[in-house]
Image (cartoon, rainbow, N blue to C red; front, top):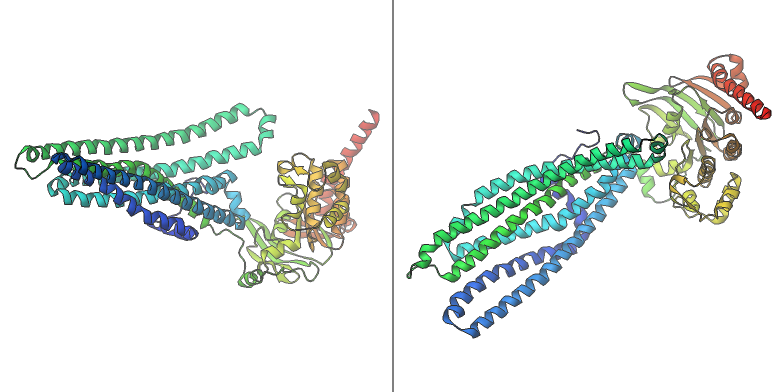
Length: 609
């Protein structure tokens, strides 16, 4: 089993029952479709009987007038059947698309609540498949699978009743084939279910690979891996094609099996009916035989179509398993009952009423149980204080930041904001009070305004004031104003310019606490000067916790905390820690002194050139 591909466990009936809530808003087209099904079936059942009446009546008696009346009734029945079939099919597809809409919104909304651990475990392409292909498969199951299967069962029941009414002996000959048909179609059904489940899984694997390679296309091209990437994509695509061929073979064999049974039963009926039909005193009329053979053809027609119905049904059930497995995921950011009540009140909740004091009390955290990252971290950042977190890779700096705004939750201990446990606060209000600027800035494709406002209604005056504060006003004017379009992930501007817009996005909400995670690590020296000005502006009047290695950033803070093995090993100002000659001094000598020497060499080389 591929990680993250676990399917929901339950019966087919349980799957269908779980879809009921998503069809409530579609009850009108569903009800119309269900009401029309028996009417359409009745129209189909009448037609063979009209043939029997025509043959044994007006045709046998050579009565053109009576034949004309029966033909008129037959034509009217056909018109009614096809007209109602159109309305019924259209209604079922409307209901199916409505259910697709409800499910897709539910899956998307559920994804937004899940935490980072879930997304680290599940590739984006796999989740995209569940939101699109799998949900669409459920809609197809409703429109062309489940309802039509119900229609076929209803029609088969009516045909069986008509056969028994017309001739009991011929009906028993026909029904003798049912055990073989039931066992055969059941065998195919089980294998089609497995096949469609595997098709969905391989589609997810293919989409995941494609999404990752498109996102990393520059790396693929820079390292000349186009041919290798093509081969690996082709291999995954061939796996999907092979599984599709398997489903096609099963579908074709099922179709051929049902057709073979139809011809065998037809031959048996003709042989069985030949003697009483040829006997002048026989009880079987020619009209009854014609009507019975027509019913027989209609009897096997829905059974023959069951291959397609089963394909839609099994594909939809396989999709339902995967969708409900996702909806049953509980790796979300949980809120306490009090926080839920605060959020349900509808009013905006201000959580940092004390100015943004942050406190860690004996906090433990591990991404994996065998590898703890924070081992009893305790620290106190006063309201309005600026603090830098330093340490070697893996010391827990970024992890500590993620616990403040509940990207992750502490395994034990408490993280407090103005004296309140962050787990007891509404998540939306908490994250509004805690602004974050990451090392890797993500900008959405769209306007600059949309990327800064993030759905909130903010005035142009406020936006321009924020942009000027962080030094991005000239940039935005050069791009064309607030409505200028950004490429995917802000690809049409530089890394430093993306960072400036990220600071503007945070300051637009005026958070009480600011978290900076290596905000200047991916920019050049020229961009760093502007970003340092933006950092200085952003820090004013708010609690700031910075993870940084650049001395220019650290020099702006009030206190430096050096982390080692998930705990605070040293703290103090730059001069105090240098005088101690401990871990901070060693970090400084290994990183900052080396960087300073490198800059001097580069400067000297530049002067000589």
